[in-house]
Image (cartoon, rainbow, N blue to C red):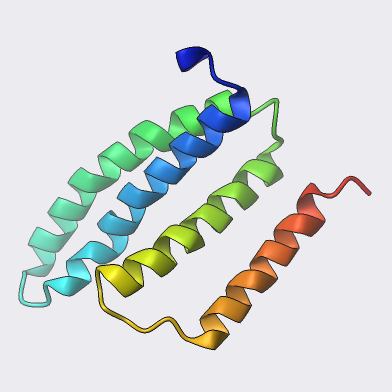
Length: 117
């Protein structure tokens, strides 16, 4: 285990960082509509490489402490959290109330998944 940190810290930290790269790869090119599609794809693939370099270890380290459904749920909540900040700060889009409500519903779904029934 890197850095002798607890498994959840390492796994969630790597998932967070991978989601920053993923969001840049998937949506960063939208700020540059005049760039060719080929250029956007090539740059996105280069960025996505780093996303995978973080995502795969995050899941490897986390699996066993978390099950696959829990890892995917963490990834989705982080993905939406990163995206909400990215869309406002980088793309300059408004954060609407219905986006926040939808996100909170997904957080509610995460509660259901992680709750020991």
